[in-house]
Length: 65
Image (cartoon, rainbow, N blue to C red; front, side, top):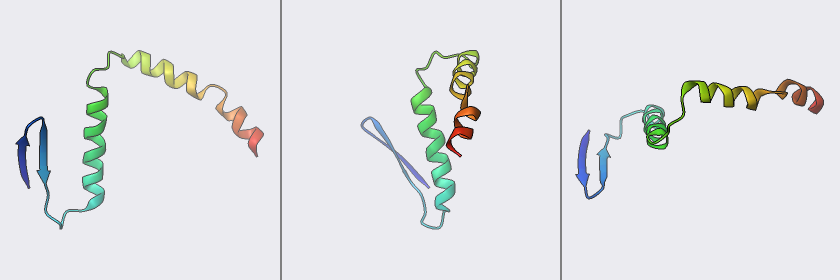
């Protein structure tokens, strides 16, 4: 693996033999870090949002069947 810093970017070169699924997992994690780096949300805020999103989900699912 080769890591280079160019201007405002970091370039990573990985050998062909590396599993694409592992590379995708790492890229997904890095994307998550990039998207959440400036977030001020607390775990409590996230839990509240998840609860709101799930509210009534079972009833909506039953109606679709």
